Each structure stands twice: as C-alpha cells, then as structure tokens.
Length: 353
Image (cartoon, rainbow, N blue to C red; front, side, top):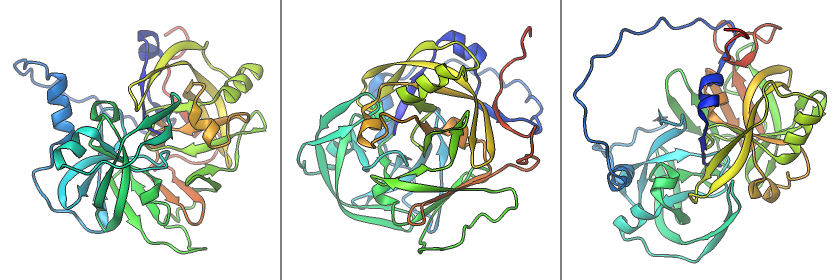
C-alpha cells in the first residue's frame, strides 16, 4: 500500500527510524565536501526522471538488485512491453500492479476500462492501460491491464503488486540490497534457516499475507507486511486499543499521509510501546493511524490492524515472504537475539537529554 508520510518538526526531532538495541553503531563519516549549488529540479524534471529508462537494458536473471529510495521503499528494474527497464516500487500491500500515467503515454499503451481501487485515503476510479508483458528478472507476467496513477504520486514509473508475486516467494536481503523471486511449492522449507529466525504463519486476504500471531497487551492484532509503505499505519480500531491500554509512548500528534492519488489524508501519529509478533518484542514502533478504506476492503475495519512498513522491515538482515505457504520469516541481524534486552525499538533520546 503505497503512501508517503508528512511529519511535523516535532516528530523529526523526536522519532527517528527504528533501530535494533544492542546493534553496533557505525562511526560518524567524515564531513562531505561542499559542492557548488545546483538549481532545484522542476516538477516536470522530477516526473521525467521517474519514467526515464535506465541506461542499460540488461536484466539480471534470478537475483534482482534493488535500491532503497528516499522513502526507504524498494525500487527494481522492470521491462514494460519489451522496453526499458524502468524503476518500479515493490509493494506487497498492493493487490494490483500499477503503471504511471506518464509512462503509459510515452509508450503509447492502449487505454483499458476504468477501475475502482481502494487506497489509504479512500476509493478512487482511475484509468487503466493494457500492457503486453512485464518482465522483472526471471519473472514474466503477460497481458496486464494495469491501473494508472500520476508518477509524482507513485514516486516511480510503477508498482509491482502481489498479482506478480502471489504464486512465488520473495527473499529480500537488505545487507546485499538484492531481492530474489523464486518458484516454490506447498510445504516447501524456508530459505532462512538461522536459529534466531522468526517464522510467522499468515492467512491470505485478497493476495496479501496477514500475520496471525501478533498481540498488543495480550489482544490479537492483524499485521500486513507492506513493502510499499514508508512508515507503519494502523487503523482506527488499533488506535482505540492503544489509547485504552495506554500503550502509546508519546502523545498522539496530528499529521498527514499522502495517498497514491495525491490526496492528503488526516492522521495521528505516536509510538506504540510494545507489540509482540510470535515472541519477538517490537518496542517503541512509530505508527500513524488513519481511517482508511484499504482496511475495510480487507475486512480489517472493526479489528485492530497494522500495515508494517519499510521503516521496520529494513532493520532485519533478510525477510522471506512465501505467498503459497502463507509464511513470513524475519532474519535478525548479527548480534541481536530474541532474548529480553535485544529488542526492536525506535531510537529516541532519553528523557532529559
């Protein structure tokens, strides 16, 4: 579920991206050399850059490198109808693969029917375009009718949704910045076999995997691994639960989310003191709460639910998402364990500092 987060200066000062307690700290780098200022790019320049093909047309088989963009979402190279490659974001929270309107126009794609989709902000009716084929590494998807949004709102030339991934498993290696799309079979063993790996079973809803063993103060909550989300987002039922149990580390603060349609969505933000996912403590997790149509579509409006975003996922060494076997495996970084004291937490200054 792709969205962007606008945070106030208060949150910029207080909440940094989560880190693992006990992990070694990287020594500060030497100050960069001061370069001559360059004129800021215009909005048109930014959109052109998003849909401009890469300088090489080579697609590496089996292992797909990715970059973490400015919002820490994964960008991969995709061929569109034999042309490109173009940078698409991988979004395990999106049911459909999406293309930027600007890229569809540049490639002269035939327009399809109007589609009604749920976003973080609500429901939207958007045009679609017929794509003869999409190719990413060894993965090929033929005859796609892709909904289209403006590239400036997507932040890329398109999105890879679960319609390209649901029959396979995805192994994301944040250390090597690579992603493998692999064939799998029912009851196939996990690729991550470390002793401290955290294996979480899930159920399937509209292609998304919903983790089945997550709790807040003993109350079960639903968690969706969402690689298209910059930050984690909870529904209103989760906000009520956090408030009732006084599980927020900081006061609720008004903020906004920006949907893929460009719509600004009112939200509130805090840090949840503790969530437990299959025995793993998640401490001081920054979360925004919004009354989102996306939760209603998934049948998660009335029960506490959370989209777990990239600010949390990228802390692990590896994450394996096996769609057919309904399983997600988290590989803890070296030096971190499941024991008390080695917990997943937000890096917040101590009181009085």
